Length: 412
Image 1 (cartoon, rainbow, N blue to C red):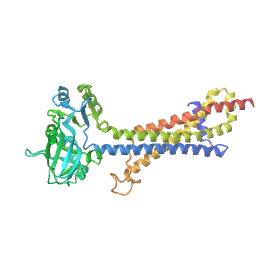
Image 2 (image 1 turned 120 degrees about the horizontal axis):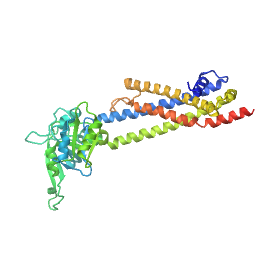
Image 3 (image 1 turned 180 degrees about the horizontal axis):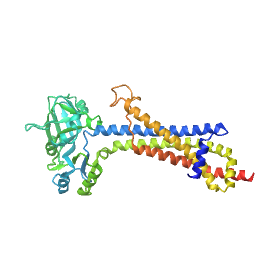
């Protein structure tokens, strides 16, 4: 067994002659434990909200989305796109086209985003799970076109879940020419009816601003026949997302980007990452303050063990080894506190997952009733490494302090 570790362990668990050292050591370990507990619980809450928001998007956003790197639209018949769409690991793919439009319903009007999709879009995502109402998912029937609005758009247009009148869609023509005498001719227009359903993603970005129509209609309205703004992809079961993304990117080249769900909602998840990082920094600072208690405990231990240090020095123990004993003692206190805090934190998170003790407020006002939490293995490792690094840096100065006491004891 390593000599400094052996002596440090004996000092830590042996009964001291001054009980105050035991108390200070216990307080130091408790401080580290609480900081570790707070770190793992806070990070788990951010994980929970991240996973919750990701789950809300998964029924509308595809697993992978191919878009042009520098243009808004691309040709469907592009050889690279066609090759990518036939790769073995792709289960379903669908071309989509998004563009802003003016939506009118009776006297109400709203600027919104029309999303043209193919029939396969129904199976590509989980749109069926988002539909509200007594109708069915239908975009055309050979006689007329249909449009499926978000719940928020329904409220803004005040049209109800099954409006009798059609939505009127207006999109500026591609050539951009405006006839002053008849401005209406500068727009492509179409009427679409509601099939009696609306979708609810629980995200304002989609619910308040999207109207789903057929791809053919979207192409006609935007003068983009044979073009699309994205190729949305669902992977076959068991396919590695990372490998599929890498292979798609290699086939498509630099002129296209392959986006996963996190990258498709980059603005939303960037906020989560930033808030999580800031919280981590604040709690690490609190951890650093808690580690200062260890220095007081170690100084008192050095004073108590002066005779031991003189004896070890006379027996030939190098000064560096003696200094290391007290440094290791501080690290052990930190390690005990860190492991205890992690264990308690993981237990608390698991209990919150199962029973939801801490609620978000009045039931029904939020998507979930209790704080969502999630444990990631990487966070546990991060907390453990953070505690050990911060504690080691904070007790590192104890070496020179111990050296001064050793020299003073030897001179006496």
